[in-house]
Length: 105
Image (cartoon, rainbow, N blue to C red; front, top):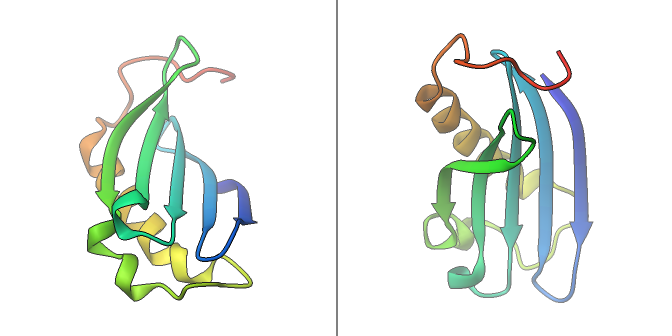
C-alpha cells in the first residue's frame, strides 16, 4: 500500500519519484532519481529500521533503465515501472513477518 508519493521536476533532464509503502509489516521507501546522465541516475528501496534509520536493501543503477525514460516528464509515469521493480525485489529479500516491530505500530 502506497502511503505517500512525491514527484519532483529538477533541472533539464532531472526528475525524481519518492514513494513510502507500508507493506508486510515494514515501512519501505523507494526513491528513483533520473539525472541527465545515466551514471548519475539511480533507484533504491530502503527499509526503516527500529532505530529510525533507512537501510538500502535493493537498488538499480540508471544504466539499466535510463534510456527508457524521456529527458523531461510532467509527472512520475516514466519512473513508476522502475520504482515497482525495485520494490518487488526488496519485498522478496525481506522476511515475512519482520524480525522486529515496525516503528509506529
